[in-house]
Amino acid sequence: MSGRVLIVDDSKMERLIITTSIKRRLFDVEIFENANGENILETLMEEKIQVCILDIMLPKKNGFEILKEIKENPKTQDVVVLVCTGMSEEASIEKALSLGAYDYFAKPLSEEVINIALPLKIKNAIDLMIRKEEIIFLSYHDNLTGLFNRRYAQMELENIDLEKNLPIGIIMGDANGLKLTNDAFGHEAGDKLLIKIAGIMQKSFPKEAIIARIGGDEFCMILPSASEKVLEHSIAKMKSLCDLEIGEPLKPNISFGFAIKESTDQRIHDIYRKAEDVMYSNKIKESTRIKKSILKSLMQILKGMEESDVIRLEKTEHLCLKMGKALHIGFNERIHLKLLAKYHDIGLTAVSLKNEKEMQTEGKSFYEILDKEDNHCELGFRIATALPDVAPVAFDILSHHEKWDGSGFPQKLKGIAIPLNSRILFTAEHYIKWIDEFEREQQQKPEFVNMEKQEFHLFVKKVVLQGMKELSGTYFDPELVQILDEIEKEQIKK
Image 1: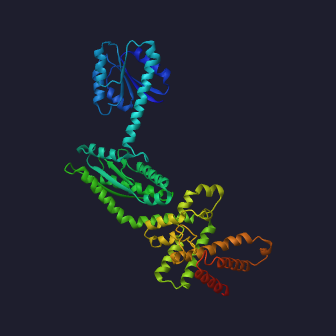
Image 2: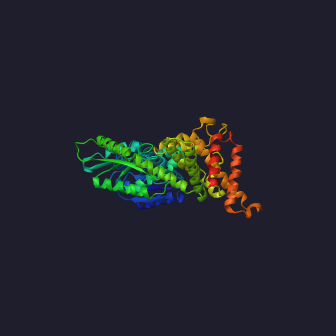
Image 3: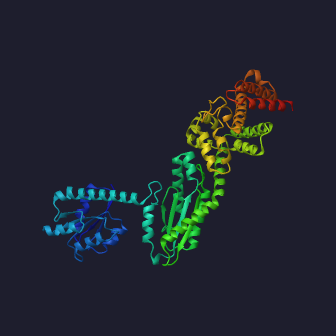
């Protein structure tokens, strides 16, 4: 147990006895001493004293007066005061307790008090203060980030609204991408993002700034005696530190707005609302750029896959466009098909992070995780709906693992109820994937070792196509398998 105790007594011997008594039983307690009762309030505040042992009979100042001052000062009123008195009359003890003393003990100190009562009273008092401090901390701080909370920010807004603190700057900030992070990557990832943002804020703003998390993704910074230059510098530093962060999964990104109270004629709450309005306006202006940045971050995660997986994605995209052309789909549908081929596995960014430990320890790839029928389709749908560039193909992303006979996932769609582009992607993706897998499995077998590379590749294509034909009408749309077969025959002729 740790604690900080101040002994106020004019007798050096009494201070030594009390100190020895405490140290004998309570090892982790720091003792401070005062012999005359002067500057008590300053010591209590500067040294963050939890318990004060106060002698009533002091040479320069009456102990009752000191006790009254301690309890009337908002900054020291919670300090536990134990009264030490040689006056035995009940009236003196009653007066001390009525002024706010926690407990008392009489002088001269008996052996029982020195060995048992005094250390126990100190221990109980310190425990009480620690619990109080924890309660106060929780009542004024955000439990997740450790920043101040909305309640404290509103209280300080009133307290700081003084002429001596002008100009008073208020900065409002809104964390971008938090909902997307929570929806796609889980609330644990969202919490990590908020904690990271809080840490960057504490590095970016002056020590005197009051930094509070006032909502799920909203922050407020109150700066006394702050010029516009100071506010702009703090915001610029914050943005710079955010840019230096590595996205896990997304980089911290915040929209800001600020306003300054420069005269007593202005109402502090009007300044607060103005800063909030500017922040929301900036968030709207920055929205497109922010969402493009988020999409770029997600695609960088996908690019971190195994090289073979990246090549497979490129081949799949190329084949999808060939099949779309053969089907004579419209211009808009071709654009959407290209989008789908490029972003259909965007939900896999969430799967990869959630299963990162399994991938590292067991050496599994994205696609082995995918084979577990993870919820990457739903995750991809959620991500796509939040990003305008990908939103047009959100439903196609959701449906790209549906099967012709209704045995796919996640919606169990059947036949033409499955979007055409999803069916095209499903067919092309499996064709490319199965070719790669078959080649890896078969190329070292004796009967294929001496076969020319091109000849072996064509052989594999024929085997995979035959397998897909056998699954035509169950896994795959029969028309699309026929289109694929025609494309490959044409390619072979060339």
